[in-house]
Amino acid sequence: MNRYRRRTFGLELVMIGAAFVVGFPLYVLVNLAVRPTSDTSSPLRPTASPTMENFTEAWQRGALGGALFNSVVVTVFSVIVVLAISSFAAYPLARATARWSRGMFLLIMLGLALPFQLAALPLYQTMRDLGLLGTPWALVLFYSGLQVPFTTFLYIGFLRALPRDFEDAALIDGCTPVQGFRYVVFPMLKPITVTALVLNAVAVWNDFFTPLLYLSGSGQQTMPVAISGFVGQYVTNWNLIFAALVISIVPILLVYFALQRSIINGFAGGLKA
Amino acid sequence: MTTASSDRLSKTTAGVHVGFRRRLDNTPPWWFALPAMVLFAFVVLVPSARGVYYAFTDWDGLDPNYSLIGLDNFTVVFHDPDAVQAIWHTLLIAAAITIIQNGIGLLLALGVNSAIKSRNMLRVFLFAPAVVTPIVTAYLWRNLLGPDGAVNSLLGAVGLTRWQQDWLGNPDLALWSIVGVIVWQFAGYSMVIFLAGLQSVPREVYEAADIDGAGPVRRFWSVVRPLLAPAFTINLMLSIIGGIKLFDQVYALTGGGPGHATDTLSTLIYKDAFTLGEFGYSVALAVVLTIIVAIASTGQYVVLARNERAAS
Image 1 (cartoon, rainbow over the protein chains, first blue to last red):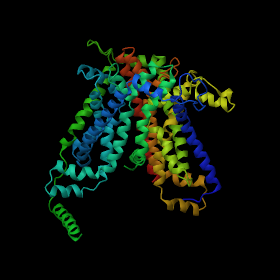
Image 2: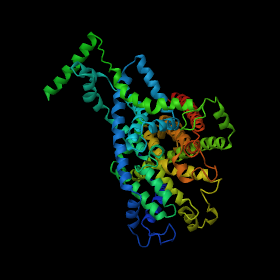
Image 3: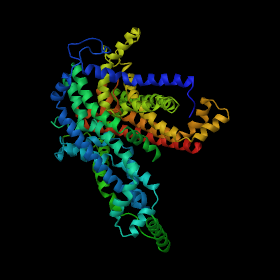
Image 4: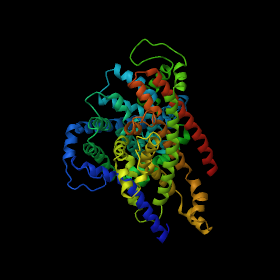
């Protein structure tokens, strides 16, 4: 855009300074996670004799393997269900002009505005009565409904900007509406599906409040709740806690750095939709 | 090649042709929306409606015998100093995050959108905390902000011993420490949204401003800022609503303490329902939260829609 001037170099230094502010806590996190408990020197000083022991200990004592598995299962199933039912629902809602369509759209908008704290307590009671507390499937059910308004809203916005010619042609060629959606419309939704996938996966994976309510006290935990329980249990042993935090962060960052372009575009994608 | 293109051609003409002759009713059937609407009703609509109803009862979450008590729960909310304070904290946190996070996010976006060499790496790196689980970063910061934590060590190392604080244990500071942690994590998120807005500004617009002799500040204010209106809408929406609903970071950093110095509506709702068993009162607080969210989002929508119209 502009040439590289002395002022640009100054800006470069300021921005790298900002990166240090972001990086500093992460440095301390890793530095303390590899430190033996006996080492009580300043958290800033690079650990003299790094060890991997904290990681194995945290992994075993925190039952983090099971929590990681539950988080993966809950996230994968919830996101698949939400994307499937929301894109399916958005199709008639974006196209039809009848009164039922407007009514449902308004309900979706209402759902966008309702904070989940309001539904959380009565739903807790329903889940309890249905015997679904303490199972990861309750979470899949929960997120599948909870993420519908936002996801459907994204799809409706995208669909309204999409020309109808292709689906019309498909119907003329003898497709049923379901086939038309499956083979013609859904493939064209790919950009917004990527955005919805990224935002839903991050939201479900990171959610803490819901599994805190619906899984608490059971042996089944997701990663955020397992970490929270672990901190409560080993509250003074920060080296061990930091190892657990690193374990929970690494899978996320691996996925993030591997797919950074799609993920960042996914987050920014709501802007273009 | 020729067959493919002529095939496509005949399909389009057929479509147009038929379309002209008779209006096709190819609106997708309404039942496509059924699975989503059923789950949405089960998880959100019905429980929310029940929540509103329970707010007018003395239900404790277990006992099937409860009675309607009118507005009593709400009267209690507005006479309960803890609740009033929590409402105030909620609004303060939302306002502080909105201003600080978006201010820093915008500056970062302008920096990353410049000619600096590290811009691509910085964009990826500065955004990274936004994907990490908030409860995890909050526990990390709980240690860093402790009396013997890394923040105080750093201040000591650079000779600012006087600035060392008990960041989370001091009731006057704790709320601002929470705001700082959230800004640290999500400024990169605001940056990415602003950056998408900045990159949609056509190059010619910058060049035209340059030719007209506008400096960088003038160019930003008069040319770029109006074109960022959609990015502002999304960013303000996300941070205001996110700030109002805030739970995870408060739960992990201070648990609402010291005392009630950092309690928000969300932490109070959780405590009242699950440690005190006052479900009716707790859902009344949730109704207050809902009303605040509704006022904030409507107000914001009206103001920003007006601005976006004025800008275009």
